[in-house]
Length: 502
Image (cartoon, rainbow, N blue to C red):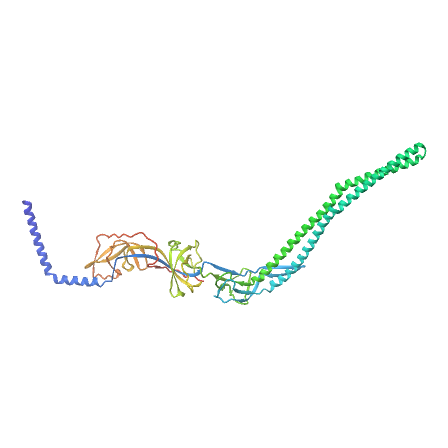
């Protein structure tokens, strides 16, 4: 009961205080009402934006130049060649003069004449080399005859003379054997007659000598036949066969010599043909002028071997080369979508994607700058009519996509004491809130914490004049954002990167 009385006592005192305060408030209503009205008017006059959800896409914008992925470089293909006939040399130094040339920027079909060079020096080489070919052909025919004669000699000896000699020697042996038999008979008769006293002994001696001579002739004939079969015939046959092989080798030499001269003639004829330069495929002719070397493709220009004359890009396979600053190149990856705007096509937007990025930087623009740039190649999905190599383009590469995130305008953010801060509008005051940010574009900022969807934030809070009360928020309001995904459209960031020059 004691506690209850004390409670009532404090309760009465509290009630008295409330009544007193209420009276004071009633007494001061007119001035407080005017101040609150002024604050509401000041708050209503502030520019504000609602925190809303959106798909945030980050585009990296840079300059680029239209080119073809299939660009043929057409060079002067004539070579420095020479021909010698009987010690007199004729040469062409791999240089010529342009007689006529197709206008720059012409559309051509495969086989169309692009340029005609002076071919008189090479035509003289062709005529001179034709003489060498004719002479080599005559020598080849002569070598064929020599080989034919050598082969005939082998056949003649093996199938004719050698058999004839064999028959002759065999006949001589038979004749010597017959003479020897008769001599033996006569010697035997002489000896019988001498024994009976009918012939003198001298006659027997003479018959013995004649018989010995006949025996010697028979031995010589037989030995001659053996030597012929074993040595003379094979040796002479080998000599004739070696003549055939020599004739064959000489014919092979003349054959190679003739082929070499014909190849030389064909090479020279190709040089004459190369003086008429034709389009290897359909395309768009671009002169290979070099301003720094004062080279301009036109009739009368002296050109040399391997000098570039034309570029012939294939207009059905177009791409854009975009320069990326070294500070942002790591943000770009192959496969990222890109949008290309070509100035010459009345602002038409072309779709494409990044297909490659150079591993090494290109030369700075200008040359004395230390800033490095990398080239990103964007392949176009569709090639419109009228798109030409060398046209200036603006390339917007989509690097990040954040779907369904909280976002605020960039001008709603200010930095105070190193913290990112926004001012949220309440009924009669502003709340100062520290926010956490994610991705950013040139217009919008992703909010990952500190604000809630539907909050109204003051734009350009740096110009607040103190007419509206500002209080610190009791605690930050969290905001969740989904993971990034690729996108095609959205806001973009413009990066100051020079355009690619022709």
